[in-house]
Image 1 (tube, rainbow, N blue to C red):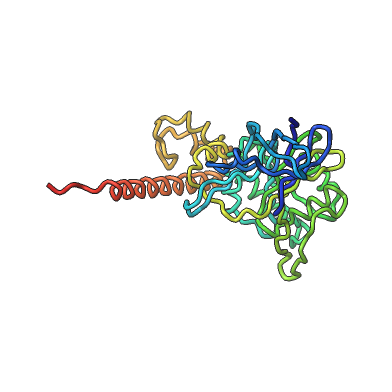
Image 2 (cartoon, rainbow, N blue to C red):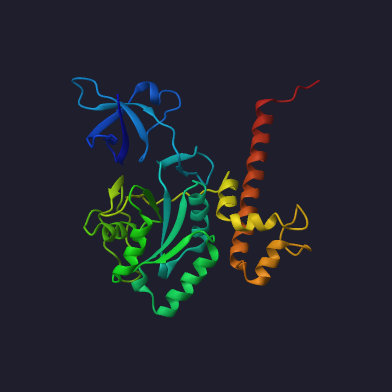
Length: 323
Protein backbone atom coordinates (compact mmCIF):
# COMPACT_ATOMS: atom_id res chain seq x y z
CA UNK A 1 0.00 0.00 0.00
CA UNK A 2 1.28 3.48 -0.93
CA UNK A 3 0.78 6.84 0.75
CA UNK A 4 0.38 10.03 -1.26
CA UNK A 5 -1.31 13.41 -1.52
CA UNK A 6 -4.03 14.61 -3.88
CA UNK A 7 -2.36 17.33 -5.97
CA UNK A 8 -5.02 17.91 -8.63
CA UNK A 9 -8.79 17.65 -8.94
CA UNK A 10 -10.57 18.30 -12.19
CA UNK A 11 -13.53 16.79 -14.00
CA UNK A 12 -11.74 13.45 -14.22
CA UNK A 13 -10.06 11.34 -11.56
CA UNK A 14 -7.93 12.66 -8.66
CA UNK A 15 -4.20 12.91 -9.35
CA UNK A 16 -2.16 11.65 -6.39
CA UNK A 17 1.56 12.23 -5.89
CA UNK A 18 3.20 9.42 -3.94
CA UNK A 19 6.11 9.76 -1.53
CA UNK A 20 8.46 8.59 -4.28
CA UNK A 21 7.31 11.45 -6.55
CA UNK A 22 5.24 9.26 -8.88
CA UNK A 23 1.88 10.74 -9.96
CA UNK A 24 -1.05 8.34 -10.31
CA UNK A 25 -4.60 8.84 -11.54
CA UNK A 26 -6.92 7.31 -8.96
CA UNK A 27 -10.48 6.34 -8.24
CA UNK A 28 -12.17 5.86 -4.88
CA UNK A 29 -12.75 2.46 -3.33
CA UNK A 30 -16.44 1.53 -3.31
CA UNK A 31 -16.37 1.00 0.45
CA UNK A 32 -15.05 4.55 0.94
CA UNK A 33 -17.81 6.36 -0.93
CA UNK A 34 -20.71 4.09 -0.04
CA UNK A 35 -23.23 5.54 2.39
CA UNK A 36 -21.57 8.81 3.46
CA UNK A 37 -20.14 9.37 -0.01
CA UNK A 38 -16.75 10.57 1.24
CA UNK A 39 -14.42 11.93 -1.43
CA UNK A 40 -10.78 12.94 -1.29
CA UNK A 41 -10.17 16.66 -1.85
CA UNK A 42 -7.12 18.62 -2.93
CA UNK A 43 -4.43 18.31 -0.25
CA UNK A 44 -5.75 15.10 1.28
CA UNK A 45 -3.22 12.49 2.39
CA UNK A 46 -4.46 9.13 1.18
CA UNK A 47 -3.55 5.44 1.16
CA UNK A 48 -3.52 3.74 -2.23
CA UNK A 49 -3.88 0.23 -3.56
CA UNK A 50 -2.32 -0.38 -6.97
CA UNK A 51 -3.96 -3.56 -8.33
CA UNK A 52 -1.97 -5.37 -10.98
CA UNK A 53 -3.45 -4.90 -14.43
CA UNK A 54 -5.58 -1.87 -13.49
CA UNK A 55 -5.08 1.46 -15.25
CA UNK A 56 -5.85 3.45 -12.07
CA UNK A 57 -4.81 3.21 -8.45
CA UNK A 58 -7.53 2.98 -5.80
CA UNK A 59 -7.89 5.41 -2.88
CA UNK A 60 -8.66 3.04 -0.01
CA UNK A 61 -8.39 5.47 2.91
CA UNK A 62 -8.37 9.23 3.53
CA UNK A 63 -6.04 10.07 6.42
CA UNK A 64 -7.09 12.54 9.16
CA UNK A 65 -7.02 16.18 8.04
CA UNK A 66 -5.12 18.85 10.00
CA UNK A 67 -7.08 21.69 8.37
CA UNK A 68 -10.17 21.92 6.16
CA UNK A 69 -11.58 24.65 3.94
CA UNK A 70 -15.37 24.28 4.09
CA UNK A 71 -17.95 25.94 1.89
CA UNK A 72 -21.37 26.38 3.47
CA UNK A 73 -24.54 26.84 1.49
CA UNK A 74 -25.95 30.32 2.32
CA UNK A 75 -29.46 28.96 1.69
CA UNK A 76 -28.86 26.16 4.24
CA UNK A 77 -30.36 23.65 1.82
CA UNK A 78 -27.16 21.69 1.23
CA UNK A 79 -24.60 20.07 3.50
CA UNK A 80 -21.23 21.79 4.08
CA UNK A 81 -18.67 20.83 1.42
CA UNK A 82 -14.95 20.36 2.09
CA UNK A 83 -12.96 21.95 -0.77
CA UNK A 84 -9.34 21.61 0.39
CA UNK A 85 -7.36 20.03 3.22
CA UNK A 86 -3.98 20.05 4.98
CA UNK A 87 -2.86 23.62 4.26
CA UNK A 88 -0.97 26.11 6.42
CA UNK A 89 -2.28 29.48 5.24
CA UNK A 90 -5.28 31.05 3.55
CA UNK A 91 -4.69 34.10 1.35
CA UNK A 92 -7.75 36.19 0.51
CA UNK A 93 -7.46 38.16 -2.72
CA UNK A 94 -9.49 41.33 -3.29
CA UNK A 95 -8.97 43.95 -6.05
CA UNK A 96 -7.71 47.13 -4.42
CA UNK A 97 -9.75 49.46 -6.61
CA UNK A 98 -12.97 47.52 -5.94
CA UNK A 99 -12.74 46.04 -2.43
CA UNK A 100 -16.00 44.51 -1.23
CA UNK A 101 -15.82 44.94 2.56
CA UNK A 102 -19.01 42.97 3.15
CA UNK A 103 -17.62 39.99 1.27
CA UNK A 104 -14.22 40.39 2.93
CA UNK A 105 -15.87 40.09 6.36
CA UNK A 106 -17.24 36.70 5.35
CA UNK A 107 -14.01 35.57 3.70
CA UNK A 108 -12.13 36.39 6.91
CA UNK A 109 -14.57 34.31 8.98
CA UNK A 110 -14.35 31.43 6.50
CA UNK A 111 -10.53 31.59 6.48
CA UNK A 112 -10.13 31.82 10.25
CA UNK A 113 -12.54 28.95 10.76
CA UNK A 114 -9.91 26.65 9.21
CA UNK A 115 -7.40 27.34 11.97
CA UNK A 116 -4.71 28.28 9.43
CA UNK A 117 -2.82 31.58 9.22
CA UNK A 118 -4.61 34.29 7.24
CA UNK A 119 -3.45 37.11 4.97
CA UNK A 120 -5.23 39.56 2.68
CA UNK A 121 -3.74 40.50 -0.70
CA UNK A 122 -5.01 43.63 -2.45
CA UNK A 123 -4.45 42.97 -6.15
CA UNK A 124 -4.38 45.21 -9.23
CA UNK A 125 -2.97 48.19 -7.35
CA UNK A 126 -1.85 49.61 -10.71
CA UNK A 127 -5.53 50.36 -11.45
CA UNK A 128 -5.84 52.70 -8.44
CA UNK A 129 -6.28 56.38 -9.27
CA UNK A 130 -3.50 57.60 -6.96
CA UNK A 131 -1.05 56.62 -4.24
CA UNK A 132 -3.27 58.31 -1.68
CA UNK A 133 -6.15 56.05 -2.75
CA UNK A 134 -3.93 53.01 -2.24
CA UNK A 135 -2.98 54.17 1.25
CA UNK A 136 -6.59 54.97 2.18
CA UNK A 137 -8.03 51.65 0.99
CA UNK A 138 -5.19 49.61 2.51
CA UNK A 139 -5.79 51.46 5.78
CA UNK A 140 -9.51 50.63 5.75
CA UNK A 141 -8.74 46.96 5.12
CA UNK A 142 -6.14 46.97 7.92
CA UNK A 143 -8.80 48.33 10.27
CA UNK A 144 -11.13 45.47 9.36
CA UNK A 145 -8.75 42.50 9.59
CA UNK A 146 -7.32 41.04 12.78
CA UNK A 147 -4.06 42.25 14.35
CA UNK A 148 -2.32 38.99 13.42
CA UNK A 149 -3.39 39.07 9.75
CA UNK A 150 -1.05 40.56 7.16
CA UNK A 151 -2.33 42.92 4.47
CA UNK A 152 -0.22 43.29 1.33
CA UNK A 153 -0.69 45.48 -1.73
CA UNK A 154 0.31 43.87 -5.03
CA UNK A 155 1.06 45.42 -8.40
CA UNK A 156 2.27 43.51 -11.44
CA UNK A 157 4.68 46.37 -12.17
CA UNK A 158 6.36 46.20 -8.78
CA UNK A 159 8.49 43.03 -8.33
CA UNK A 160 8.99 43.84 -4.65
CA UNK A 161 5.29 43.44 -3.96
CA UNK A 162 5.33 39.98 -5.58
CA UNK A 163 8.29 38.98 -3.43
CA UNK A 164 6.35 40.04 -0.33
CA UNK A 165 3.63 37.56 -1.27
CA UNK A 166 6.21 34.89 -2.10
CA UNK A 167 7.58 35.21 1.44
CA UNK A 168 4.18 34.11 2.76
CA UNK A 169 4.42 30.87 0.75
CA UNK A 170 7.36 29.39 2.64
CA UNK A 171 9.11 26.19 1.51
CA UNK A 172 7.36 23.07 2.76
CA UNK A 173 4.02 24.85 3.25
CA UNK A 174 0.74 24.85 1.35
CA UNK A 175 -1.36 27.98 0.82
CA UNK A 176 -4.98 28.16 -0.31
CA UNK A 177 -5.78 31.23 -2.43
CA UNK A 178 -9.43 32.32 -2.34
CA UNK A 179 -11.38 35.21 -3.79
CA UNK A 180 -14.24 36.07 -6.08
CA UNK A 181 -13.86 35.32 -9.79
CA UNK A 182 -11.89 37.97 -11.65
CA UNK A 183 -9.94 39.39 -8.71
CA UNK A 184 -6.60 38.35 -10.22
CA UNK A 185 -5.79 35.09 -8.40
CA UNK A 186 -4.54 33.29 -11.52
CA UNK A 187 -2.45 36.30 -12.55
CA UNK A 188 -0.94 36.39 -9.06
CA UNK A 189 -0.01 32.69 -9.27
CA UNK A 190 1.63 33.29 -12.67
CA UNK A 191 3.67 36.15 -11.19
CA UNK A 192 4.74 34.00 -8.24
CA UNK A 193 5.81 31.15 -10.51
CA UNK A 194 7.39 33.46 -13.07
CA UNK A 195 5.66 31.63 -15.89
CA UNK A 196 2.25 31.24 -17.49
CA UNK A 197 0.85 28.28 -15.53
CA UNK A 198 -2.71 29.52 -14.98
CA UNK A 199 -5.09 30.67 -17.69
CA UNK A 200 -6.35 34.22 -17.25
CA UNK A 201 -9.37 35.68 -18.97
CA UNK A 202 -9.28 38.85 -20.99
CA UNK A 203 -9.69 41.89 -18.77
CA UNK A 204 -12.30 44.53 -19.58
CA UNK A 205 -10.73 47.96 -20.07
CA UNK A 206 -13.70 49.66 -18.40
CA UNK A 207 -13.26 48.22 -14.91
CA UNK A 208 -10.23 45.92 -15.03
CA UNK A 209 -12.32 42.85 -14.18
CA UNK A 210 -11.92 39.46 -15.79
CA UNK A 211 -13.99 36.35 -16.19
CA UNK A 212 -13.40 33.31 -14.02
CA UNK A 213 -11.05 30.81 -15.69
CA UNK A 214 -9.93 28.34 -13.00
CA UNK A 215 -12.13 25.23 -13.26
CA UNK A 216 -9.85 22.72 -11.51
CA UNK A 217 -8.05 22.66 -8.18
CA UNK A 218 -4.36 22.04 -8.46
CA UNK A 219 -1.30 22.37 -6.23
CA UNK A 220 1.22 24.60 -7.95
CA UNK A 221 4.87 24.59 -6.90
CA UNK A 222 6.33 28.07 -6.31
CA UNK A 223 10.06 28.25 -7.17
CA UNK A 224 12.00 28.72 -3.95
CA UNK A 225 8.80 28.44 -1.94
CA UNK A 226 5.90 26.17 -1.08
CA UNK A 227 2.74 25.24 -2.93
CA UNK A 228 -0.37 27.22 -3.80
CA UNK A 229 -3.90 25.99 -4.48
CA UNK A 230 -5.87 28.49 -6.56
CA UNK A 231 -9.49 27.83 -5.61
CA UNK A 232 -12.22 28.44 -8.18
CA UNK A 233 -14.33 31.46 -7.21
CA UNK A 234 -16.28 30.57 -4.08
CA UNK A 235 -19.76 32.00 -4.57
CA UNK A 236 -21.46 30.67 -1.46
CA UNK A 237 -20.28 32.40 1.71
CA UNK A 238 -22.94 31.21 4.13
CA UNK A 239 -22.53 32.07 7.81
CA UNK A 240 -24.71 29.40 9.39
CA UNK A 241 -22.90 27.64 12.21
CA UNK A 242 -20.06 30.19 11.91
CA UNK A 243 -19.67 31.15 15.57
CA UNK A 244 -16.23 29.55 15.88
CA UNK A 245 -15.07 31.35 12.73
CA UNK A 246 -16.24 34.71 14.06
CA UNK A 247 -14.53 34.08 17.40
CA UNK A 248 -11.27 33.29 15.58
CA UNK A 249 -11.51 36.17 13.08
CA UNK A 250 -12.27 38.65 15.89
CA UNK A 251 -10.19 37.05 18.63
CA UNK A 252 -8.94 40.45 19.81
CA UNK A 253 -12.51 41.62 20.51
CA UNK A 254 -13.33 38.32 22.22
CA UNK A 255 -10.29 38.77 24.49
CA UNK A 256 -11.24 42.35 25.29
CA UNK A 257 -14.79 41.23 26.12
CA UNK A 258 -13.39 39.01 28.88
CA UNK A 259 -12.36 42.22 30.68
CA UNK A 260 -15.79 43.88 30.51
CA UNK A 261 -17.49 44.62 33.82
CA UNK A 262 -20.60 42.63 32.89
CA UNK A 263 -20.41 39.11 31.50
CA UNK A 264 -23.37 39.76 29.17
CA UNK A 265 -21.99 43.10 27.92
CA UNK A 266 -23.12 43.93 24.38
CA UNK A 267 -20.36 46.55 23.90
CA UNK A 268 -22.93 49.19 23.02
CA UNK A 269 -22.60 51.67 25.87
CA UNK A 270 -22.67 49.62 29.06
CA UNK A 271 -20.48 50.90 31.91
CA UNK A 272 -17.10 49.23 32.30
CA UNK A 273 -17.01 47.99 28.70
CA UNK A 274 -13.40 47.12 27.80
CA UNK A 275 -14.26 46.87 24.11
CA UNK A 276 -15.69 50.40 23.88
CA UNK A 277 -12.72 51.68 25.89
CA UNK A 278 -10.35 50.13 23.31
CA UNK A 279 -12.20 51.97 20.54
CA UNK A 280 -11.98 55.27 22.44
CA UNK A 281 -8.27 54.74 23.09
CA UNK A 282 -7.59 54.00 19.41
CA UNK A 283 -6.57 50.39 19.97
CA UNK A 284 -9.59 49.03 18.09
CA UNK A 285 -11.13 50.47 14.92
CA UNK A 286 -14.83 51.33 15.12
CA UNK A 287 -15.31 49.74 11.68
CA UNK A 288 -13.95 46.42 12.98
CA UNK A 289 -16.32 46.50 15.94
CA UNK A 290 -19.23 47.35 13.59
CA UNK A 291 -18.39 44.31 11.45
CA UNK A 292 -18.23 42.12 14.54
CA UNK A 293 -21.67 43.31 15.69
CA UNK A 294 -23.19 42.83 12.22
CA UNK A 295 -21.84 39.29 11.82
CA UNK A 296 -22.86 38.29 15.36
CA UNK A 297 -26.36 39.65 14.76
CA UNK A 298 -26.68 37.86 11.44
CA UNK A 299 -25.56 34.49 12.81
CA UNK A 300 -27.96 34.87 15.76
CA UNK A 301 -30.86 35.51 13.36
CA UNK A 302 -29.86 32.53 11.20
CA UNK A 303 -29.66 30.30 14.27
CA UNK A 304 -33.11 31.45 15.41
CA UNK A 305 -34.59 30.74 11.96
CA UNK A 306 -33.04 27.28 11.89
CA UNK A 307 -34.36 26.44 15.35
CA UNK A 308 -37.84 27.64 14.39
CA UNK A 309 -37.69 25.56 11.18
CA UNK A 310 -36.69 22.52 13.27
CA UNK A 311 -39.65 23.08 15.60
CA UNK A 312 -42.05 23.30 12.65
CA UNK A 313 -40.64 20.12 11.10
CA UNK A 314 -40.88 18.37 14.45
CA UNK A 315 -44.55 19.35 14.87
CA UNK A 316 -45.35 18.16 11.35
CA UNK A 317 -43.67 14.85 12.01
CA UNK A 318 -45.54 14.31 15.29
CA UNK A 319 -49.16 15.46 14.85
CA UNK A 320 -51.25 15.99 17.96
CA UNK A 321 -53.80 13.39 18.91
CA UNK A 322 -57.39 14.51 19.11
CA UNK A 323 -59.06 13.36 22.33
